[in-house]
Image 1 (cartoon, helix red, strand yellow):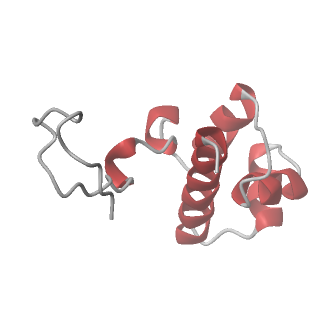
Image 2: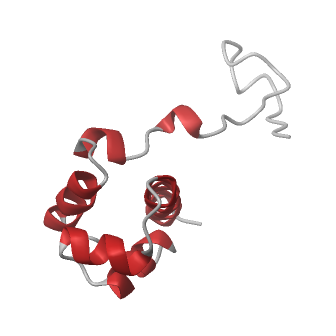
Length: 97
């Protein structure tokens, strides 16, 4: 999966979690932020490509900043290496688990 697709999936899951935590249906939330509920559904499923304006509206509706809406790499799992990253990769075989 491309990095952009993975990010879109994480963004959509985050929006869905925050919307549900606020107790809002897709229709209620869409009406509140001025974005059609089908577009929000598409974004939540990782299929949409929301504009910056749409993301600002969604963040505002969730009463958070755009910065807090966007997922970061903290929740992304790092690959596990059998050898130290400090060792030269030319001398070691990369055995990702």
